[in-house]
Length: 301
Image 1 (cartoon, rainbow, N blue to C red):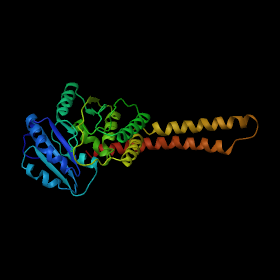
Image 2: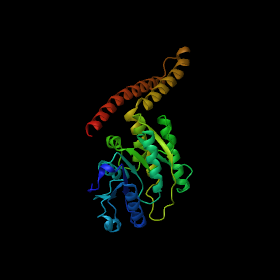
Image 3: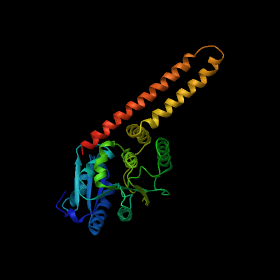
């Protein structure tokens, strides 16, 4: 971090960027002016961009409010955010996209909500925004419903790119998050699982004016897998116990008529009962492994 007086700054804007040179051309000057007016600082993470991002941001490198972190190779959206958060020195930090779709005035609104409620995480809720197409909305809907099945969820827009964090907690939790686009979903679920105060605040989204989005169907699939992983980490019995009970009940239902009629025990019913017990044992083992992994993640902070 540069020599800007961090003691008087309360917020750092963390901006992951990959091949967003066209957007940054029209966005950087506005961003730096806004940060100066609010007495905030910016960490821009150039995540191995292959376009002329370096040339676009070069004229702004001398600005004391801007710190640029350069990845030699692309680490992914989550990997870029992790690098930014690890370098945050202010009490709060907020992630916004480099494509200019987030409105800077919303950051002020999130900060007011954060401070007034002593919250740990504020999620920028994009509900009602028409900036993304129906295909992406479908993908986000699938992810949201999977998350609700896996755990109690009161947050609507868990994969919003605009989130404001208590920096200390964010630094503690990012080691449990993936480097992929699923970072946004998983970090929210971790805050919820850890019983931190997570709130939502409506925000507006601008239409993308340059560049292209890297989100696709594979992103949604990877996110669903990561949600399952994080549920297994924090509450594995949420997955293994229903499977176990279901198999045992089905086996009992299958076996009972045969036993009553004197035909013995069906092999399929016995297999289902045994499999149910195995799932229950796996859930207990996963619970212990999850405890170990969480302890190790906390030790690494």
